[in-house]
Length: 415
Ligand SMILES: [Zn+2]
Image 1 (cartoon, helix red, strand yellow):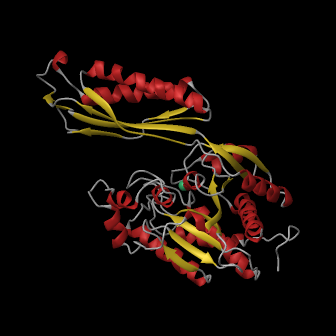
Image 2: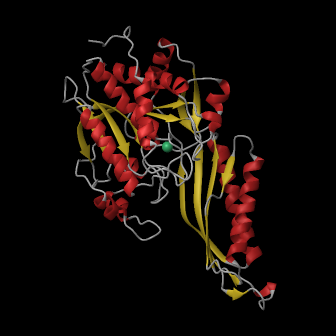
Image 3: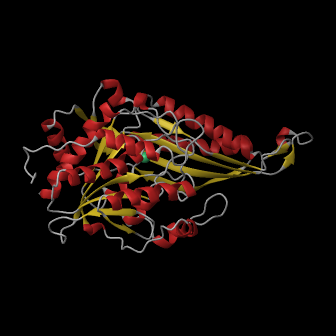
């Protein structure tokens, strides 16, 4: 029985890589990455594969109303809340092979390693795949975790539609993952998420593990602009109400704000919708999403205030009507001090190089941190390239972080 600090377990990195390779063949993108959108046929195929692996590892599966899949390796005392690891298996349209996938499959590798070594734990150990973390097909992102943590009501989640009008709930049923397991955060003792950093710091500094102590504060908004259709030839400039002009002013000005707060501040308009989007027709409608982030919450707010001040300018220059139709803020997250200390203690014991850092991207762990003790562990990715088909990681840089996850989970599960 291995349950003391002195004993250290090690994952089978080759097996983890073989598992990642199988995932990399499900929902292949245009080149080397993945295009595995939430609740698509490819998402179903990957879920089926994950369920098969977990079943083969002796786990008991359950699926909740939002399609989150939990695989449980029972503990000596089944009445105790479980230690849970996880992330997501869905990807962006032109996503990489690793993103959240590494977190889920590392959790599976932890369970496989415990099996190999015949380790019994006091608490159950579970791996979870959260539904629709990416928020590509259905918004918002981190939807499954948001449901589980009580941020979104189930009916609301099930009613969200993709661009073609397909409802989340219908699609979940179609792929066979509309479950009925209760939503019960109190059944979780601790949540560990391992994720690639999605930034360049660990790679540049040659470190193996980032212990995340908080997140960038992120403000977001969706702005709707209403203009008027007109012919681009006969319509004089002074008579126009051009929604695309307003959107363009917003895009250009928001970009400038990010530069003012460089290098830590970031501002983006990642999505624009314009109609009718035809040659010769002045646009009567546009929508722009705005995203500003800064590690200092006060400066993030300052950036967002500047964004708000851009809107009347854009309105005036285009003679349109515009307004914010959705607004959000996230990232003011505090991870659990005890778990963060535990991860650090394990990293020191295993002689794994590490540093404390902030996360600039949102993760399922952000929602979990609000309701259960949560730790987020980063591993390096080449040059910080992510949400890109050329996202790349290597076993020798990644395995040390997965070993930290394994031993931290083991210690917590026996505590
Ligand atoms: Zn992710």
